[in-house]
Image (cartoon, rainbow, N blue to C red; front, top):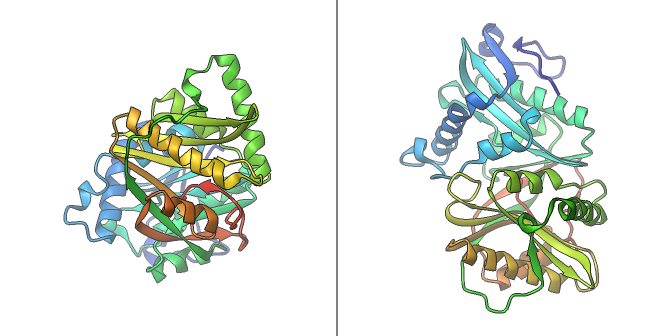
Length: 336
């Protein structure tokens, strides 16, 4: 979608604060590659300030959510500026029938001015143009302010999402898995088709192919695949190390899924072992993954594998329906 650069409008649905209405020089535009460094700074400053980090500008260490999401979905990246200076941004991700957005960021000295509302209005237009059927986000469960903002746009809090981690242990004899990056081009095309069919079985229209391609193209990490009876049984898109969504010494499972079947739990166990083996091979000492607690069986198996919760937030969803957050679904993700 091409976003027209425009001054801050009056909304038919949401009333902007007087401060924003007076700022006729506020522009909304696509977030460009040249903006990414400043957007990363605003992200760290905003979230570090809200969470009380002693050095807000250093929040998050050397992970990078901004560059990877812009690379995957540049048409979903929005920036707000004043007199040529970036003051806020948001990044929307397109997973086929499912979408989510974040991190949504506004410079702390401009909080309470209605800028987040302004950015969110345009973000919702993106999802309309993408024909997204189910939209989600991760936010702070303790913050009535955040939850109230998103409720204005039709999002409702449901189950908690746990961001979990475990120390990496060497795994012996982990077999029956492969790497997307090692496949010839012709096999990669076939693999993407199989991945799309698998996610479609879990939730109609769910599609992670862009994530798989971007991780491979930018060397953010690896997509691991497991098979059963010569069929794709599961896969996980992993970021590894500094400059990715993982950060130093960390393997982050951004998305993982297994095929619905009577032995899905055992396949999920195997997928977790494979991700840990990948972390060992990449020289990482920590494995991080998120799971919505409504996916009760997946949550329990992650605990059994030694994962412990470091941070938890609430998943807000539009419409107010479970989506794929159901006890029998084995998916790893967290919508941050």
